[in-house]
Image (cartoon, rainbow, N blue to C red; front, side, top):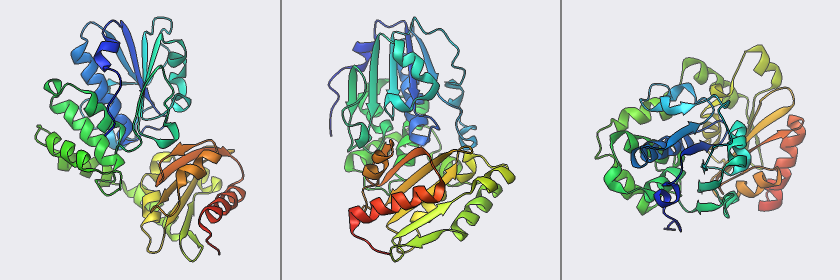
Length: 324
């Protein structure tokens, strides 16, 4: 376990305005970690003005009490930002919150992505061996200030980023933390059911089509799923429709690396990569300006979809020696 080299509250105690933010298209870990951190800071620093700036989360998180802490209007004053804390990413992926980061008198980065191993801020707590950013937030807390709502969001982040404790980033420390968290008063079973497992009818239909139309390469070791721009427009899709698609591709028998692509617009493609460990997808993602972990990574690219996939496939083959 890597311990932080600075004391969070000591570094923040004199700040009048603190901005907490995370990456674009926030996932369960980003949401859980940033909300838990905001709650904790507001409890410890009651005289400070503390804002959580994130893009609007996926609808599955809307029912959670505490989600209302997220502010999606980035038009606030900039000049008086004392501290900007970037959670679960580097400063290059925080979207419209970049302007707060750029003018902040002090910046702090809390992350667990190996592609951001050295951090991006004045003060950095980055542990690539941690299960999640939420686990790092828990480590930084004085536990006597931990309450039911904060525990709920830390648990949310840990479970989402470990695939409900399935991924090899899950450690003994992770499980001990989770065991402590479920002693607090929140329905952890309902939390997972509603935010991780449950899908809308439309999502299930879309994911079923993606799986039905997927392609296999390298004797089935690589599974490639995609959404065409034509379907994206014709069926009025949005990125939330694809939540969980990459995981369904990865669990196809024989698959050791899944690639999923969908259009953000007419020119930009979102690429998600998942691996059993045979392929270090973070290294592939980094060559396209993205990042992530050995087994889970992603990036955005302006490219023609099929040409981009061929490029990705060639990098997978270079790394593994696999052949068609």
